[in-house]
Length: 417
Ligand SMILES: Cc1cc2nc3c(=O)[nH]c(=O)nc-3n(C[C@H](O)[C@H](O)[C@H](O)COP(=O)(O)OP(=O)(O)OC[C@H]3O[C@@H](n4cnc5c(N)ncnc54)[C@H](O)[C@@H]3O)c2cc1C
Image (cartoon, rainbow, N blue to C red; front, side, top):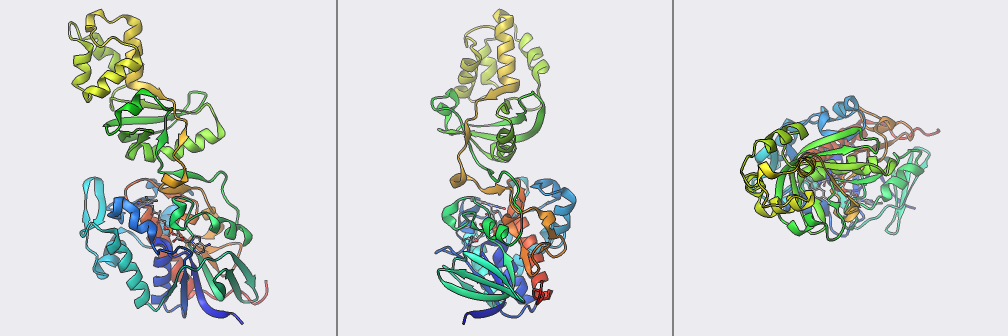
């Protein structure tokens, strides 16, 4: 005979821990949280460069992609930023605001956040088990049977919080998607890495500038030339290609567009706020100034030299000696240079996943599955991904809270389907 519980939470990452503790607090009966990873909360530990960017001081549906904005808003407002700040404060984790509104623990340690969640879960009576990998969930009369190498568990309700596919060594390897599918859910197509660095061809001149960061505007353009998305922020040049906040934010857009249209291009404007006509006008007024001098007023000197090399412009040339062809080439290099992106650095380097179980397959007030009674879903397994800045954790806290509280209130699976 297998062991039985009221609520089984599958996956004890950010969303699963929050769901479990909220279910425990809401009097959901016996709550067992299972996680396949040998080390609990590995992704929280590595988040925010080891400091965990817990949330952002302003979070709206516009900070997310995947599901529709009204649907995302409905989930977010059930546990907002003020609730997150109050929750962590009550658990002894004070948060501080950093540049651009990111909130971090004052300890500067992601472990503080993880410890607080684990302690809060244990205080709420949650039984945490790991490593405990769930391979199959089978609906039964009145509940589910969860099975895996560690054994079998019967549960009246299940919360699926298995995360996405990013950094699979943390335990989130996409297995949860197949479980969701086996329970009747669909998955968006394709499911791709997001918030991920992008690769340039080996030996591309920009890869020699590793460590240089510049404010830019990045634009994804379809093969037809149509402008699809633009993101402004810092771009970091690396030995493999491109990283930094603007690149991470634009990555999902480039990857998804490229998956359907190989002609998709990524363009960079190295002078935010300028466009081709305005850069052209500036270059026309250089007079006797050397082009390299003008460039060095705007860019780190190594970047200035590489941009001139990419434009095929002699750095020594004076403004009044620039040929029309050279000027045009420099204008397009500075205002709309096409970056020959080969692809992303892949799942091992992605912070999140774009795609997953469509949010419309859940009831937004409870995140209860519309196709499998007794099942709730939360966190990254759902088709919602946020931009960089603490938004993905806010989604985990909000959706986890919603699913956990609702599972505690909810009825078991109906005895007959
Ligand atoms: C390097 C890095 C840095 C990041 N930094 C930030 C940041 O600073 N701020 C921010 O907002 N977001 C950040 N993120 C994103 C954020 O970590 C995720 O969005 C968030 O952790 C998702 O929470 P989740 O609970 O849905 O999934 P996860 O945290 O991935 O947890 C899922 C859990 O489910 C378990 N699991 C999976 N399958 C099974 C199974 N079959 N059986 C049992 N258990 C299973 C896994 O072991 C895992 O512990 C970062 C991500 C990475 C990779």
